[in-house]
Image 1 (spheres, rainbow, N blue to C red):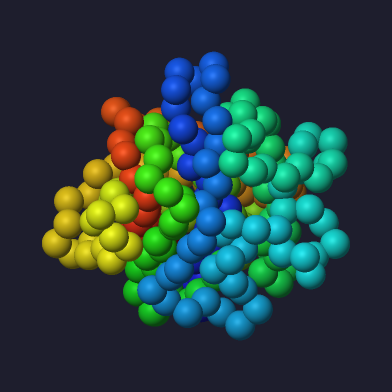
Image 2 (tube, rainbow, N blue to C red; image 1 turned 180 degrees about the vertical axis):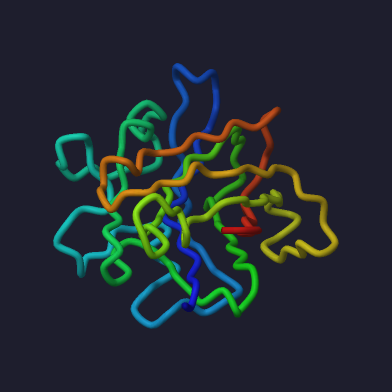
Length: 197
């Protein structure tokens, strides 16, 4: 069986005290590996207009759009589409290509203290399996002056995390996952490497 890696939607939140934290949505993303036909690295940022269902929704299924300036509370109440059919709102690739690395451009240098990620899984071939989900990830931050070229082989990883697996093919189990940093960082570019799935 050809294993695939799936990963969906990345939004950075500015942590100025969690009660008033706001979202900073990246303006662009690039990747080091070409995705499968039909998937797009842009689905990590934007709703796929070719899909009938919304990329993000609330618990009732109503569409939600997150943009820069929205509250962290709003982001944490959202669910992400994933049904295992086609690519929908996800970027996918065959694992033989290596570890994917993404560079997110925040548009301007920004103080950030956390990230919000949404998972993807299609049961990995059977109920109760989280195969194809993202597991461990690593992040490096660059200021505007440091630029948008990253080297995960030589640079120090500044944050790492492990995403919760999801096992069922429904939207409502795919709630936003919050990862807070030990301290705030100033960055325009965020390099994210998927280490394992």
